[in-house]
Image (cartoon, rainbow, N blue to C red; front, side, top):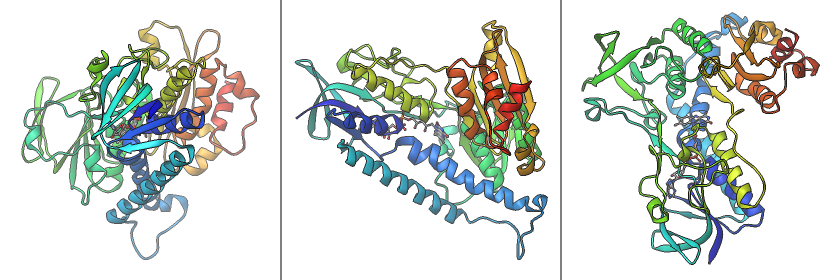
Length: 451
Ligand SMILES: Cc1cc2nc3c(=O)[nH]c(=O)nc-3n(C[C@H](O)[C@H](O)[C@H](O)COP(=O)(O)OP(=O)(O)OC[C@H]3O[C@@H](n4cnc5c(N)ncnc54)[C@H](O)[C@@H]3O)c2cc1C
């Protein structure tokens, strides 16, 4: 049987688009070599947020007295085994939901590793195990894998990537996290809440490279107050068998001791062994180049998600796959990265959308900043004892919002409002004219509209 669309990889890009394609009447085939849901559901977004939520409750319990509460009969504590069990249950529940949705929409899915076999008579051939499948269109959603840098001695150390950290059955006393990006910070937050002594080693001069520098610095200070040690501007030279790191900072070498190393230096698009060359395609620095319709050099082969190397976020993956499907269906749609939010799920959360000041300065774009402490929101003050926060809007000369950067809970839930404003080229007048529920943290946007 010939399919209209075959998709390789059932992560957020693959499984969401498979469901839509089938509902739109395409005969849709989905290959997955591991678990439905991909990295996001099984070893990324969802397991981290599930564990971080337990950690957040623990933080609240530890700080109960600040809210006029007390724990009778003992200290706030956690049970790692039960936290992990709850995480597994959460993943199972969501995986079951994906299965039902795929089945209900009529997607045919095949478990196994798929490879491109070639093309004949205008049809693309994909093999999986001993079976061969034919399809008019192919969408590659094979995602990414953790990058392990070529650090001397690292291969001989029993280090963790995010995958092992999410499945650990015991905690080290001290952990060194190599990489102060989003994933490194989320793990720093988790382990810090669970009482592990955390050190973060970041090569750049500030954590969270690429995000707003001022907010990154404020977040770093929040975690320094909680005893996390940051080594910024620091390069790892060597890993020793006892989990120590020899690092170099400002020309000096020093040793950072730990009981476990966690490597969080980024992810690499996954294209190896796919058989791209059979269709005249090749990766560039690991990523597969695509045009604004998510189409590769081949007119009937598309790619979406981490494989394209664009933003390595699940919601980007979902949108890219939707754009690809629309193009296949002849619906006019193009991919824009201008208003895609990014969130660091620390406690407090940091969320960003649009341009950062650093990007605007580099591009010589004139802008002005309107910013307010989160304490302008009564609800924020009521719910955040001893935590500072900041929300800033970056505006162009016509008062259009170019970027929004926010530190404070629940930034992840509020940032879509700014994304909408950026996507539609609105000015903060929009926020002034909107009625926000009172008291709510979202009122910070109304306050910014008044400034
Ligand atoms: C620790 C961690 C936390 C994260 N947290 C967040 C977050 O909070 N928010 C966010 O937006 N993003 C987060 N991400 C990133 C997010 O997980 C990815 O951006 C997202 O999963 C990418 O989706 P995808 O569909 O491109 O690929 P993936 O989710 O990587 O899925 C690709 C799938 O393709 C399958 N596959 C590969 N090759 C083949 C083949 N040849 N045949 C069959 N199947 C194949 C793989 O087994 C995999 O299941 C996180 C990532 C990590 C590691």
